Structure formats: C-alpha cells, structure tokens
Length: 188
Figure 1 (cartoon, rainbow, N blue to C red):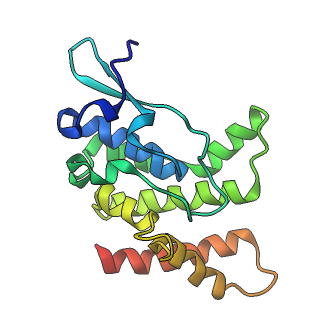
Figure 2 (figure 1 turned 180 degrees about the horizontal axis):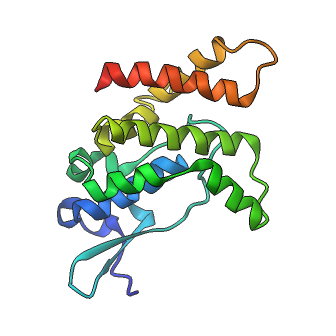
C-alpha cells in the first residue's frame, strides 16, 4: 500500500465517512490516548478513494481514561451516523473473546487494560445501539479540559462508589453497565 502522506498534510474534507468511522471505532475500542492527524496515513485505493491507515498504537488500552483524546472528533464525518454495516460490526465485538485471543498469543493483558477494553467496548456497543454518532461517543470518552473528568470517568467513579467492599470485577462491570445505560439514556 502506497503512503500518500498523513492526515496532517490534507484537510479532512476529502476523507470518506466510512474511513473516518473505521478509525473512530478502533480508537474508541482501544481507548487510544494518542490519536492525532499525524499518526493516520493516507493512501489511495484501487478505485482512487482515499483510505486511512492508523499507525502508532503505543498508547492504547491505558490504565484509565484520563488521557484519551481523538483528533477526528473535530472532523465533520464524526458527526455522521454509523452505517448499518458498521453497526453490525460493532454488535459483533466481544471483549472477552479478544482478551482470550490476546492471551492465546502470549500477551497476558493487565487487569486495568482488560477493564479498559471491556468498558470501551461496552460504551461503543451501547452508544451505537442508541444511534449515537462517533462524535457523541468520543466526547463521552474525552475530557473537555485537563481538570474536568470525562463522562466515562464519571460513570466509572459512580460505579466504584456504589461497589460493595470485596465485590468481584464482574459485579463492578454490571454496575458500570447500569450507570452507563442511565447516562446514555440522558444523552440519547
């Protein structure tokens, strides 16, 4: 695949919606804390359409959602709804299956990173199910300012505050799911 530069070299107006949504789904799922236009390469497909290729995944699945940031939030395509094909793909995502696959290939994913994958996958699936756009879901994951927690951080804190001492990770995730449903219903 030929590299035709990074997204920094060209404004986002020429990027196909589906290509931006592919990047958005990947970044939200992995809670990418370093997605900027310089680490998305551009190429031309055989049909001449712009294709976006994400690179540099070194700060994915962080311990917390504190540093999550997505430059594509400011691109107009992020405000477009997901296609039915993308929604079907999102529905098929399974964090437990993916964690098992990572273990099979020798990566014993840390508990905090596994939690991040489970929660970000949960948010992506619940948000897409409610018809939320990548922009809306992404904004739930990103802080408005350095000192103001993101909505996902607020959800996690509320679930943590209601967690009985000694409860399991599974019961914590059930609590996260309930709080997330309530917050998403307020947004949708």
